Length: 275
Ligand SMILES: NC(=O)c1ccc[n+]([C@@H]2O[C@H](COP(=O)([O-])OP(=O)(O)OC[C@H]3O[C@@H](n4cnc5c(N)ncnc54)[C@H](OP(=O)(O)O)[C@@H]3O)[C@@H](O)[C@H]2O)c1
Image (cartoon, rainbow, N blue to C red):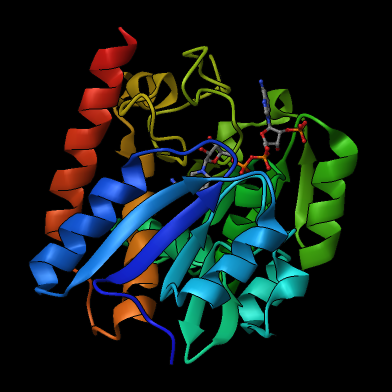
């Protein structure tokens, strides 16, 4: 079997980002494993998959905009990745590349830290890649999901694909009909610092934002000011990374505490350098 010394894992994406590098390397160090994680900014996802094979890369995360493009070039797809239609994780076992989607389990595990999802009325904002993964996970966990999306056709298509309800645009959200709201739109990530549900929140809601930069997005800050319980995007990111590390190393439980410390440190550095 092709392999490297140390064992190489990594990430392919359009623009390289440091968050996964810090988080994954902290995990491997805590596990005492001779693994190194590197982020590759690339423009050719097919060549990226070929490089996994040529170099014997043990595991490769896949980020935007390549989550669909890599799929036909893998040897197998896990059922969750196939149903969602996107791969964020490639597990290389003896040259056999299998695509997974851990965004889905990341969102579910993050939300279930606050309580069971079965029967919960969840408003899901967004119908892009993250929205699809979260919708699939929420449905599997037994939540009653309503999709809201800026572009109606895309929101309706996601609802139809997974047998969910489409509630309209973000302005159609009515807090009285829901227990939980999850923002999986790109609104509020990095800039501008905006709340996609400005003036529409209510104190009884559990509010999760998939966006993790800034650490406390305006949606989360507004929700906290009202007295809502909140979950930041870092919890989803940590849990999806745990799923990847468990695949790449075979460990039963990724060291989430060490990973969280590393991720929060990195986000604070990135936030400070952006000021
Ligand atoms: N925490 C994590 O682990 C994690 C993992 C994956 C993604 N994310 C985050 O999830 C978010 C979405 O990522 P993605 O990969 O799904 O992106 P994407 O595929 O590009 O989809 C973007 C979504 O955001 C909506 N949108 C964009 N700008 C908007 C605005 N100004 N107002 C209202 N809606 C807007 C789009 O609506 P239209 O259909 O109308 O264009 C679409 O539903 C990002 O913030 C990303 O960082 C977090």
